[in-house]
Each structure stands twice: as structure tokens, then as C-alpha cells.
Length: 381
Ligand code: NAD
Ligand code: 13P
Image (cartoon, rainbow, N blue to C red):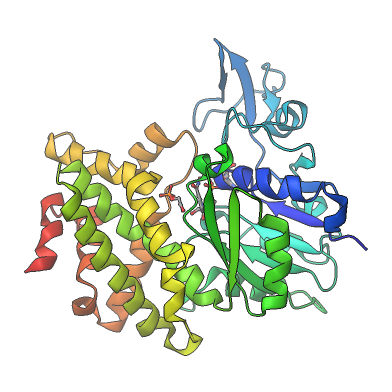
């Protein structure tokens, strides 16, 4: 039986990764079903004035009407007709194997390989709807960079997904891996060479994921370390806020390099303090998911960009909230580092470990407690 792939998510990264796996499933020798259902959070779009528009944020169609009555089309329909995600990854063709689907249950029906790639705050209502639909023996992989909480304690998103999928009566255990790496989505989608790391429990399962994702311009390597790879992906988004603050203040490369170095050490320490029982490998930090992702995010990511604007606006005396910056700059894409900064701070605070994480603490103070951006260098005191 061919492997049946389901892609849960269709944002900037979900659509970019579709350009790799969508090509691999079309090669008969790879043994995949040639159709990948891609779950899309349905939205409505209209081509007007030479560009694609969505209704204003929070707007509702007039009483008794739908957005379709108002001349809009469902995003799924446009993706399937144009083979392009015109909102989240414009100007990049999607392979014909990718079929946009607004219904989560039918997206995963019969799936033997499930890929999770949505901002993690949207996971909770979605996961219970998968139960009973995917195939027994199905394996999963999370491309989500963040952390979650359960009973007041931090929990890996890959663990949470496995636990939630097991909740239905008689539900099978889903082995979960992660794919993390230096992967700014637009660059990956353009075909610029990039590397990624699969963190897996078992290298035989890692090899299945490599076969699905690896292409000549996207080199994927497995490591037997789910927790290390996943935590690197989550924590670097917080360090990137620090990098954005120093950019916004007009500081140069030396300062940013210092933030990256201190950030990497605090990422390692966070793994030791909070996940010391997970056998995290020191080599993981030298893979694409570690230092490489930290570097690319601190130079080219959305977290860096929004933090740069946050600091500049404070400096200019016209401060803006994170929500406003996200809405103005990201066209519906979501900032991950701010939520993760709060989550990380909660872990540090509960454990009374503030002294061990001066950079993470200072980033939180600047982002949420009104500290001036130039206090970023107070970590040196
Ligand atoms: P995104 O920020 O581009 O898009 C947001 C997505 O959320 C869209 O698909 C949107 O339709 C969906 N959405 C909006 N409201 C929703 C709701 N109420 N319920 C469900 N979905 C809703 O997303 P992304 O960049 O693909 O990020 C997904 C994950 O991938 C994140 O954890 C991110 O850190 C990670 N990641 C992103 C990149 C990148 O460069 N974009 C690279 C690597 C990893
Ligand atoms: P941003 O969310 O900051 O754009 O980072 C993307 C990413 O994870 C690059 O690997």
C-alpha cells in the first residue's frame, strides 16, 4: 500500500514545504499516494485593483449574505484552480499533487503520514477532530516551533500531539518526529539551498520522513533527538526578538553576534534545566535545527523584523503593540516568538531560575514589561 500523506496547515511554511514533498510524492518509485490533502483554514478572497484582497479584519458579510454573495471566493478553491497559495506564499507554484481541503477530518482520512504545520495556538480545537480518521500505524511529524503547557508544566508540542491523538477509545499511538531547521519559508520555496533536521525516536522512521522531504535543494538529515531539535526551533524565536531589538537600536554586527552567542548558551541551559531527562544530544545544537536556524532567524525572520520595528517605534516616541505590528507587517502570518517568550518566562519564573537566563529575562522585560530596548545590554552587568 502506498503511503498517504496529509498536510495539516497551509500558511507560509506549510505552503513552502508543500513545494518539496509535493514533488517527491509524484515520483512512483518513492511509493507515495500522488495526492496530498492539505488542510486550509478557510478564508475568502477577491482579486481587485490588481491584487488579492480579504475582507477587513473582523468584518462580517451584510445580514443574510455570504462572502461568496459579495464576490469573494473560498481560498481553497483559488488554491486548487491556480495551484498557488495567493495569500500565504504568493508567486510560487504548488505541485499538482497538493489538494487544498477546508475539512480537517477528510484531510486526514486514511493518512499514514501526518504533517502538523500550524501556529500552535490554533492546535487545540483541531486535534480532537482527527480521532478515528487516520490509518492505524500512522506516523506524525511536527514542523511547529513553540512550546505548550499542560498542568502548569512545559510540554513539547510533539508530545502533546501524541497524547491528544491517543485520547479516543482504542486510538493507536502515533509515533511523533519533528522537522526543524534554518528554513525561512520564502527562501526555501524559491529553491535557495537549505538544510533541515528531522528529530526522531527511531532512525528507521527518520528515514521515511527524509524520503518525503529531501530534495536536491533541501537537504534533510535525521538525528535521534526529538526534544533537542524541537526545543531549538522554539527557543531561537525568542532570541530573534533580542536580535531585532539591537537592529532597531542601530547597533552593529558585533552586538548581534553577542546576542546570538549568549542566546545559544541559554537555549542549551534551558534544555538541561527543564528537559534534563530527555537525553538531549549536544551535537543537535550544531545541526541545522540549532545554530543554523538561530542565525537565519536572527537575520531574516519575521520575529527579528517585528522586534526591529517594536524597538524603532519606542525610540521614535511612537510605540506600537505587538498585535498592531503583526497585523501591519505580516499579512495574516503569525509571530511566534512573543508567545514563546511568555511561555519561557513562565517556566523560568516558576523554577526561580531568573539568574541563569539573563537574556531571556531581559527580552521578556523589553517585550512585555515596559523596559527600554537599550536595556538589552544590561545582561552584561
Ligand atoms: P503563518 O504564520 O504563515 O500563517 C498563519 C496560518 O494560520 C495560516 O495558514 C492561517 O490560515 C492559519 N490560521 C489563521 N487563523 C486560524 C485559526 N483560527 N485556526 C486555524 N488556523 C488559522 O504560518 P507558518 O509560517 O506556516 O507557521 C506554522 C509553523 O511553522 C509555526 O510554528 C512557525 O514557527 C513554523 N515555521 C515557520 C517558518 C516560516 O518561515 N514561515 C519556517 C519554519 C517553521
Ligand atoms: P520567523 O518565524 O522568525 O520568520 O522564523 C522562521 C523560521 O523558523 C526560520 O527557520
